[in-house]
Image (tube, rainbow, N blue to C red; front, side, top):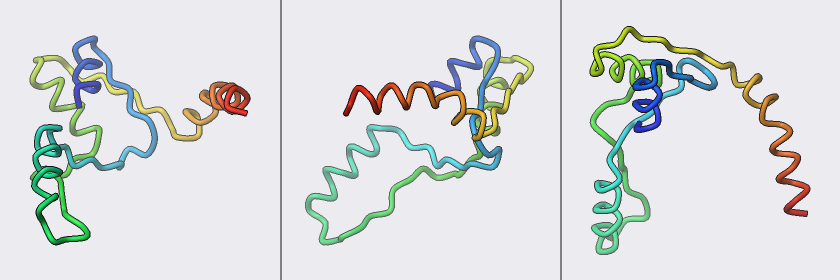
Length: 97
């Protein structure tokens, strides 16, 4: 979330992948509290998430609205992101071998 807001502050937000990718934002302190509380729970699985589900475009639009700026959102298709990061993945693979 902070990353999207920081991009909006700079004037442009880049969204990678499918424009319908969803996120259920939750603050890290809430996650930490639930982890501590879960220690005493007799459950194998717990549900954790914020009260609303957004697509990344909506979050970017909210960030621009808060800043009073016109939204400038650049969508980068997943195939292009994978292609552009291929050299980095190959370098990482060769270093790890």
